[in-house]
Amino acid sequence: MRIIDRALQAADRIAPPHPVRAHCDLPCGVYDPAQARIEAQSVKAIMEKHNASDDHNFRERAIMIKEERADLVKHHLWVLWTDYFKPEHLEKHPQLHELFWKATKSAGESKKTTDEAVGQRLLDEIEQIDKIFWETKK
Figure (cartoon, rainbow, N blue to C red):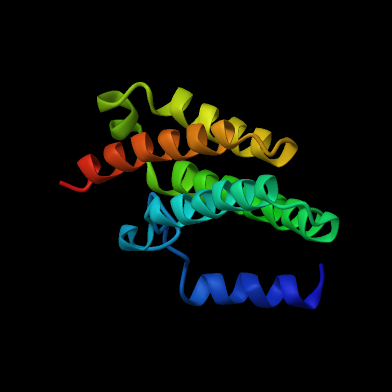
């Protein structure tokens, strides 16, 4: 047995660990769909600027930034879904699972296209999540 393992066992005997329970990493006040919405607004705005430009270098850079922002949308949605929402939220709002699935798929699709309709769909899906989120805060 390693020395560190023996030291940890001794510490456990002196002050046994006790379970701590929480449904999220931090108090729930830190979660907000606004983070995903802001990134999605950037995705759509970049699509618009890309489509309006004839500058090849600008368009290339716009694509790269759009893809980064779309990844951030997915990240913020996943954190909200996995860390904030609880089973009782899903019971009250059974459409949540499909809504998050669609929104993260739309974020992924927005990486592959400059179709502004995809960007708008992503914003609309996040808006639905936002509405449910604030209902859970009442």
